[in-house]
Image (cartoon, rainbow, N blue to C red; front, top):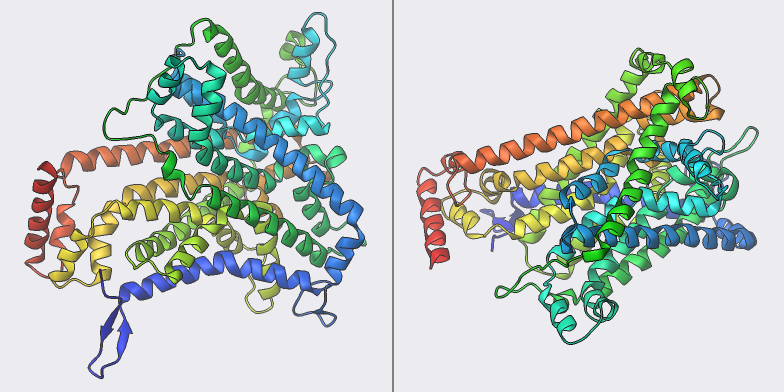
Length: 626
């Protein structure tokens, strides 16, 4: 165990440099997570406009009294949100579990292709997916309604603004997230237990109910809670589809309260009260998840002997399963992208036909988008904000994760660990509104409101993603490497920087790529924070497809911009993944099996440190061989 303090000549103790770095990282995370939420709570109890800087502000519970006075609206919002988010979560989990089961536990053909097709919608920005579904379901020109009208013996037309349609659309946009989390759970489950149940005479439904689901329950519950929180904070589908039937959905309600119309003041205090209520709900949901999964190891099925993830033969179900997957791919990838492309090459919404394809299509919208200076400016802002926020979150989270992982388990360290993991319990819409209030409050002193810096700080609130990855990766590194460096005279910070950090870099870079892609796709946070001078590409694209944007409204250019945006995100994401994989292969070919860079050994302050660490590593290899 490393000592956290050094003794001075006067007998006093002072913190080490690594301790100072850990404190700084923890302070950054505290600023990112705690201060905006504290400002929101203060705004809820101090109003009626902003909590500070306004002469009429005073401590009061008036906002909660007003909220209770509107209890009919309160219960309507609570019920609509529960139905919308809960229904979409259940559908998303059902589809994700089915797809994961097919790709991991069955002998279905084209399983690799299916897994790629399921991941493709993750690359498409959420606002682009919402726009594509809106075009696809247009009553007059939507390609899906055209296909349904062409079917015999039916005149079904899907209403895109119906509440049930919104639930289905939201579930389709969120399938990839639970799928990516369920796949490793199924991969690590021993199929021998299910085989034993079937040999004992249990039917397939009985095996699923009595063996499979009880074993998967902790993991599925966690995925369900996180999917629920993700759906609760999503603004894209309610904003585009819910103007008529979805006014009572929480995300849209919060947006409406602060987006006051002409002659009205934004109701920040009431919106803060709404946010506090739903933050309590998500906190209880997150604590329920922690309580339900605290004994997850009791259901572990992976052992060192006899583990074999078996596959189930589909038999006669192979064709129906492939048809179901084709329909899913058609609804989540093929038709939405086709609807975007058709909207981009037509001057106004028209139904698809060969005659329209020949006579009324044009490609000028793509040229206009590429020639638009605001497109390139907003794209540049998007890359700066996404890259900066990913860097802040990754660096702060990695340093703090190392400090906590290498410290004694105390109430303080456990509390810090839980706090650093808590951003997953904060819906995006609440985080965006809390950041908006924070920058409004501090703007007279620190003018950050509406700037690129404010957006970069707000995007960094997803720091828990990087923290959990860094914490897990740190636990996989043996302490003997750092102990050998300390014995040789290196400080704890030098041991971290020259030995541990190079070993953590693959994980950190992979997390950075994930957070960068999330940042480029983000719409909810800038919807609360961006101005015309700082808006990223997602907000500018929404202005192109929003009829209320007046002179900016150009649906064909908006569709063309959406396609270009999707291709750019796809190219950047997979380009970074390719660079990471090539770097990993190159490092694996150059370095020895103990995964230590020679440069890290040579850079130690003591000339004998390299030999000391080398001896420790050789002993480790010898013991592992034994």
